[in-house]
Length: 110
Image 1 (cartoon, one colour):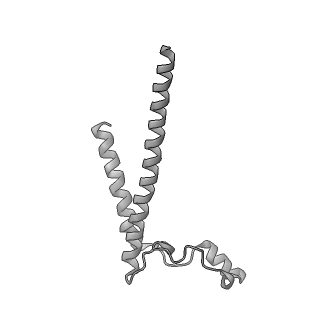
Image 2 (cartoon, rainbow, N blue to C red):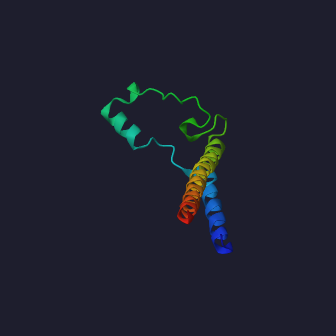
Image 3 (cartoon, rainbow, N blue to C red):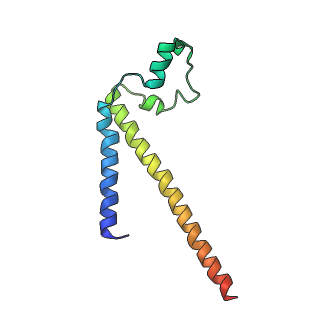
């Protein structure tokens, strides 16, 4: 990877972490469109919590006192999790592609 590409990836990572960790503090606390529509239609009170409602990142926040801070930390954890999954998948697919090319080259020699 060239130095220019590495710099681009580092800048993109910093921007993503900044948006998730800091800019999320200023997100609206108003209900989303689905909740608003359910309230207008009169069936919001029939909603039930999901099976993962008690998980550490439920409702886009950590269980804690400061909702702004816990929302920012949850955003950073989310960015890291997505990058981890995407990076692992990319690594596995690239490795698989290299192994297939090596296997094809080996069988072509025979």
